[in-house]
Length: 419
Ligand code: ATP
Image (cartoon, rainbow, N blue to C red):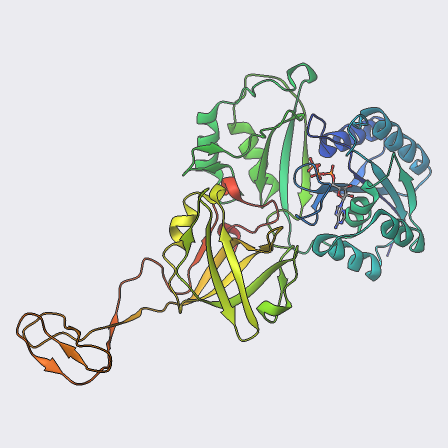
């Protein structure tokens, strides 16, 4: 067996809300590497990390790719560092690029680190200490916060993965309205879903492939296969130049951020979990349109939230009633509320206890505390205080999953079409 010596390259934190995108910067680097006869081994990777990370610009993504660690490796490193220096949005306080070079096989402790970067918070100092301990070459620009994500982007194993095709705009068009033919996006979705997904939010008539920021991306299509992405790209029509495109292998839509937890009490703030509980109270909506209810188990209870941006999902949530047992996927945010990404009904409470029906057909009313029931129509009385169980119709189904709409979905959330 021939063992190839590999150079892993990780890049993060090069963009700002005003522009750039680490994927675009990486695609520029990849072009330069190819111009110099340096080919990537496998697709470049776009790795989404802790969705609650404080300093993220948008979706907390880092990029990595690997090449042969041969006589051209030092030229490759030089190209990477020059491009990061040239293209990063250094004027933004929050842009603190970090580049990591790592030679060899990814070790188990690096894998553990990568999962920690998805589940927890890591400081720059911790990341630097770790990177040194495993022999990474570290390049920090300004504060160099990007090294946190760069190490994880290199190290995360991808057992489940998806692909994203990103097309890039001509610089003179940055910040202007994107010239995408929406009808062709609908056509692309018709022809390629569910191999591609997250293209359109039909409820909100929202074209999800189109970013809403002034970044270099024209559109991004997500898919299970590269073939479907190529078909999709041929269908989507645009009336502005596409100067480049790049296909990333990614942990998007894999639920990799979701941790299993034994019970509600074991969940921590800023963690994302799958947990089972019984609905405690009827969901209620507050000013601002956010909907809340509690779930409970033997260890405790937690407030669950379906926020206003989840739109029609709140209607689904409002159908829950006390006693329903559900498996909820989501994350505990700033307000210590468990933000629901999706839920599965494990057991519906479809029994309601009502006053008995009188022989004359009228439902009886209470005759007073512990005094049984009486009929207002025919005057009949019964001594028993026992209400009778009635099976009620529910708008939810046992075992079924319900998810937030595309427009409100996290990059890491696995959509039902992939489950
Ligand atoms: P985009 O998606 O547009 O590329 P972004 O949302 O990924 O932008 P970045 O500019 O990359 O945002 O900033 C995220 C920062 O958070 C990076 O510096 C990254 O190293 C850091 N980071 C990533 N994961 C963690 C974590 N678990 N703990 C602390 N910091 C993290």
